[in-house]
Length: 432
Image: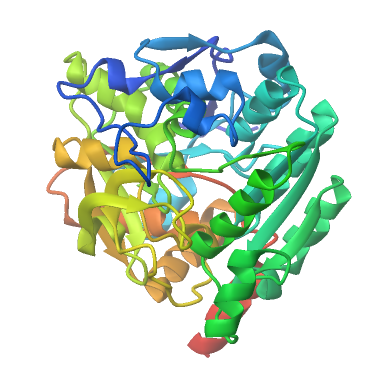
């Protein structure tokens, strides 16, 4: 019989949220509006109607503090939500820290990542409007597989353009998309005018999320039966992801009286970090805690730490509205890093705005440092993190190592990496 002095549970759980949280309602300055690429004026519902259903358009501009989650969406969420908040005792021991580190683990979703939170909501609102086909882009493949799963729940066909570098290096994501009934293409492709133009100019390109967005948007615009679904960046996507942070705040309160000292998340388009962090920023605004919020991005695509804060297109072809965000420029093509979900030239306007207001700070992590942290995490805690998540783990490791006293840290573990093992294999081979 065990006589251990520490048998406190590693996992805490709460109820599935009934509402999404909209940080925009609590910010001292409004998030800058999206602009029409032709007129330069703020976009209206009619401008977005060719791409998005009415329910999502309303959420994109809402000023309501809380938006009710429809019951059909909550019923699907309940298959895996609430996701666990895990005390990482083995990882703490492995890195020799007295800080208390928790992971909000989204790898328990059907596709193994946080992306399902928005995919289910987007499929639902498209279903309400009678949409039968959705087009989208995907980097690492997490969003594409999430939308394919969500489409299957509501009888919607899903067509995915995946960044070529990831399409070739991550075949199992493609298999998963097809298993759920989706169709997948390598991007850039010859199926769209945007893709053909890119291939004519740079036939050997490794692709980018901006290119894939252009193809998916074009495919939706020319097909009256189709609409477009975006996996990150936009306000309604960030809104849907706040189920993560709302659960985490409530879960942490059950085990830590003072809340979090720091919250770390990886940041590509921004929805994962924003979904985790925005409810913690709410706690900060209301004076209940004062956490440091850190966006961990790759050095190969550092939009927050190296980009400009300005209006830019979300895609290469310039088909999307102009978004006020931290950007490396729509034509920026990052190196084909293994963390494909972080290969985006811009950052969510909502998250970018919180950086400008001082609520969030960025840090850039190189790929080998990230994977080293991921391997340490896997060997101690047992979970293989998604390559994207390893950036947040590495940033948290660096921070607690420099802290002058024990801290309470929350890491956004956005998904597992069991479909990304070739990336780990390449890293491990380089270390031999």
